[in-house]
Length: 129
Image (cartoon, rainbow, N blue to C red; front, side, top):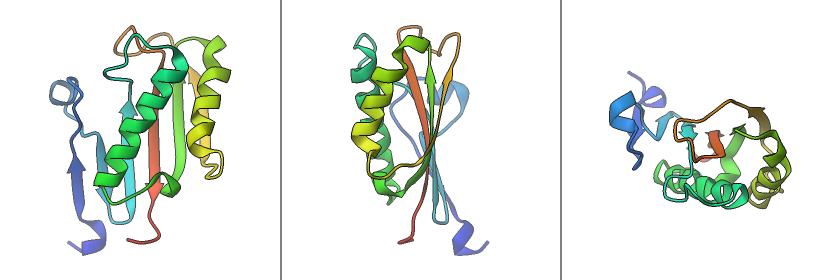
């Protein structure tokens, strides 16, 4: 297999990873895909704090995979309450205001942990691979 297509899995600390069978992130070549990430450890925080915590987890796994937030080209944000969109969006903007990835925000009935108000996925493409 070509080096460009070598796959590396990056585990996280989610208790759901071994049960569901997923990695926090997967890097293939110059692309890093970060799984849906919830605010593990900030379960009872307000939506903005949950978002910041979640994006911190994403930043950490991106760095372990050799990427940075600046490499993120897409995020997907899942909310359990539509009224949280602005608070969550502003917190997302604290991390991505200058990067401006493609982003989607969707309201869902519930996340895996009922205390979570937000879950975020991210995809990054490295130009320094």
